[in-house]
Amino acid sequence: MNNGDMMFPNARIPYGTWGSSYFPAWQTSALAEVNIGQFAGEAMNRILGIRKVPKSIMEYLVIGSTVPWHWKFWTTPMVSSCLGLRLPGYHMEQACATGVQAIILAGGEVQNGACDVVGVLTFDRTSDSPVGVFPERRAHQRTFHLGDVWDNFGFDPATGQAMITSAGNAARKHKLDRKEVDEIAYHRYVQYFEAKESGFLDRVLVPLDLLNNQGRFLGRIDDDYGIRKVTLAGIREMRELDTCVTGGTQTHASDGMSCLLVTSKERAPEISKRPEIDIQYVAKAEVRTLPALMPEAPTLAVQKLLNRTGFKLEDMAVIKNHNPFAINDAIFSKVFGYDWHKINNTGCPLVWGHPQGPTLTRVTIEALEEAVDLGGGYVLIFGCAAGDVGIAAILKVTERSKK
Image (cartoon, rainbow, N blue to C red; front, side, top):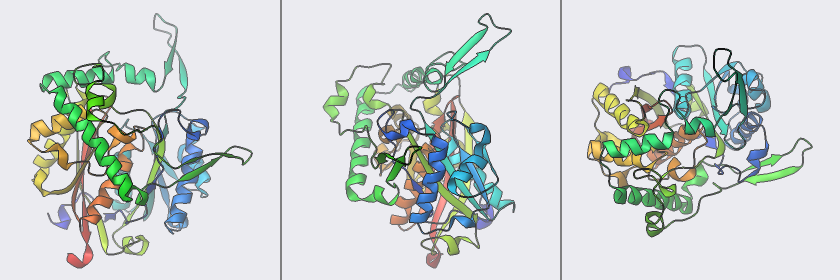
């Protein structure tokens, strides 16, 4: 593929300017007690300091979150103030597609010449999500209240069905075998713990301390709290909640943030921790599948992306996805005839959790680190989002000396 065929030929993700918090499960850490927007800004400041990247080079900030937080009205100006800068920018959200969409939107800002260095900061706190009260003058119920996380998980207003029901629907449509789905889930846990024990995740995840308003220590976020090693036998013994769906074959709500920088082709070597590494945007695709079939949407997005670009899965050095259900991976494997053992080598959201906004940002960062370890290549990232949406993107990692 020629450089001129790239989605954003002038945009680059400079290597090593990224980082993520750990993703503690819902209600398991001090993150449940703080303003997540404030935490995210302060955490990005800490991560850039650790990476020895001067935050002052940023001209613009794209933030992404999906759960309302205190002072969200002020969006990027508020969050950038917590980062220690006064930056313009905007807030975006697209359910669990937010993490990769924010990266793509930042690339567009650089490509169109509006900015030279753009920060991407995605975050969410599912713990204690707010309850909204909505006056509905034309409805039989004049006042309607909605718990932002749990009520939305449990009811799609377009279909009337819960997200877990969409997983069962997709499993029945594709005639999945629960035995295989259980095996996929178990293998994903094995991959995660192998990556953790090897030290790979230490290059991505940054321990962060939390203080209260008086500056007193609240806690340290230094693990993906809530994750336990599992056995295949244990997963197989779990009660089936819907077709091929158990507590062990679906993800869990969590809290966290992830960030990176996007810049121009000219500035990337100056900012990157390894100037010889070149990370380019190749292409992206989105689809919306039939109602209440969300877990098949990412596979359809990948099909659309490969058809458009002419790539095959065999061209990808790294394949990694947002998989709230192991069913997502089973459908991908069945449709493409692709070995599910070959994807998500360093872990995935099925295991380490689902804080929505930053989920696919962490997926992207881990995938890029894995590609660098392999000496470069194409990186395929994909996932699902509320509304039966699938998103897929391809990035290219190259060592300039080998170009």
